[in-house]
Structures are given as structure tokens and as C-alpha cells.
Image (cartoon, rainbow, N blue to C red; front, side, top):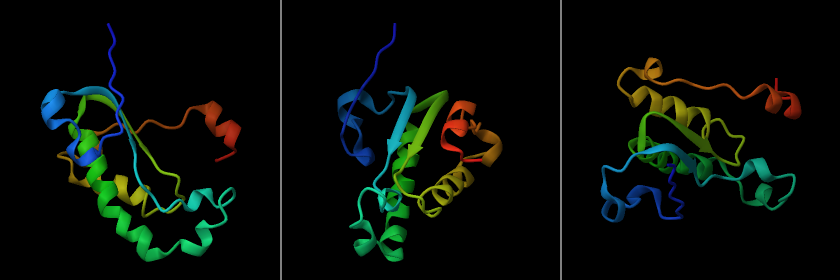
Length: 125
């Protein structure tokens, strides 16, 4: 009864012709391009190439991809926004600005907290 689509196609033009623009999904993963500053522990080269302007330049593209993901999401579906960045401009600011654009704002979306086992495993809170 379940079906899925896995793609590496660009998010801005994802399957408008192939699958039909009206195709909607229960779950959408938006793994967006990012500055990668969250990978500095394993990739020391990030420090030499990282810049505020580069991180800021990604914000607009990240917003576009997340908005496209929302267009593809069924009502009541789950969307996951993913980066390997620790930069709030690439994470919280993208989410906040897209939520502000949605009719009804934050009241129109349900933000699901991290499961307890993730919080405990990562010692994040």
C-alpha cells in the first residue's frame, strides 16, 4: 500500500513534468546545500574556506528548496529540513522565515520535538 520516490533531481524543478505537478507526498526530506561548518571536526579544510558571505549566500537557495518541499507535502505530512551546518542563518533563520511566509504562520505548522532518545544520546539539552 506504500509507495516511495527517491531522487537526486534538483529541488527547484523536481519532477514537474515526470510525476505531475500535483503529486503530493506523506514525507519529504530537504537535505539542502550548506556551508558545512558542522563538519569541521572531520573536515579541517572547512575552516580555510568558510566565510560569512558564503553562508549568507546559501540562505536564499535553502529557503527555495524548503518551500518546494512544502509544495510537495500532503496536508498533515512530515517534512525534515537537514543541513550539516551549525549556523543559525542556515537553520533556524531559514525555518522561521519560511514559516512566516505560510498562511497562518507558526500556528499553521506543528513543530515536532526531538525524540527523548536523541536528546539523551546527544546530550543536546
